Image (cartoon, rainbow, N blue to C red; front, side):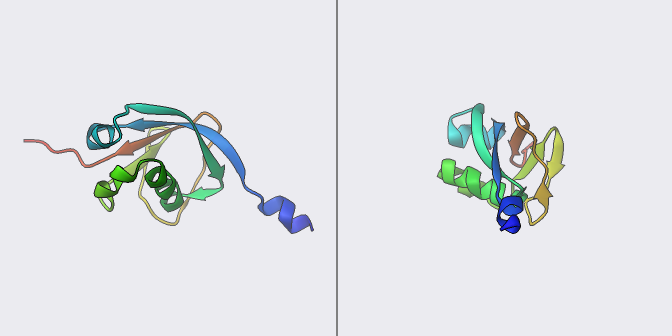
Length: 96
């Protein structure tokens, strides 16, 4: 019985920031109070964002996330989130 208590995920509220192409695709620069279960991998966090904004799928395999202004590759690593943290969606930037 104890195992069920320790493995239960809790949800935190985070602020999601969208930059460049991700802002264009979502029509948003930010989205407040997004409920995110924790612990969560960066891949699962990206999947959660894709469910909320399916148009972001065109950025698949090109985007990185940033949590508290630290870049995080999308993969299996667990992301440590705190209530109210900022999660940024950072697509590749084009220059010229």
